[in-house]
Length: 113
Length: 113
DNA sequence: TCTATATTTCCACAATTATGGAAATAATGC
DNA sequence: GCATTATTTCCATAATTGTGGAAATATAGA
Image 1: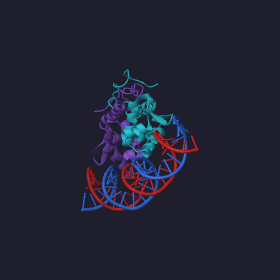
Image 2: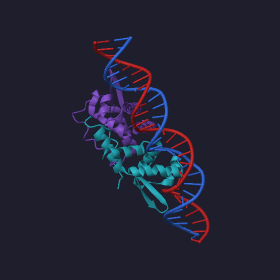
Image 3: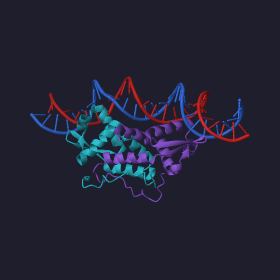
Image 4: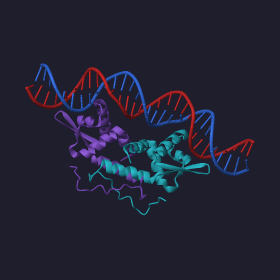
């Protein structure tokens, strides 16, 4: 990953509404949530929501698929992993107390396809 | 960490000049670098640099100390660790392939005071 | 005190980002 | 085709962020 991609991805979650959307999608798992459901839960009007979803999609942190009239959005775990890896490698390089605690990971709950 | 702090910290590194500054300071280690040296290496004019350093300081990702006429800036490793931990816990929770590879950490090079 | 150097503050301006109503587009069932 | 529902696009406007010259501030040494 280059620095411009990192900045694009960071920018996409450096906004409260979008970080909330992303968190919600992570919690929702691989099935994801339709746009309307996200907007309803987070109280975000349709056009504003669409704007934020586009930002996250452009950055590659979420994906979407159409199911009937609904468009389901899902967190792109691999992209988030890549961003965290970039920050860990490039911004913590060799500094042993500048790395995240990953004990909450690798549980039995992993559910990416 | 709450979501607002996370957004503030993410915003502070979601900008190319600032991410470069932060990376440079991480590489510089605990001694850090004086503002002038950062500006010289990254070709950033003084007032612009000062603006960006203030943003990073406000977010808590860097610290500063005065040494004679120089102000040395240092990366706040603990803060970066906290941010990565937040993202790992809140945005990857329980998803085992959504976690960073930390094998580059915990080397013998750890040098925080 | 005068001068040199380091950094910040002030300020104006430019650029980008965020918001949400209204209209448009798209998909489904009758 | 028409009505219904889901989502996006368009648009105007507001708010925030980024830039850098010039002046101000701060520190140090002669």
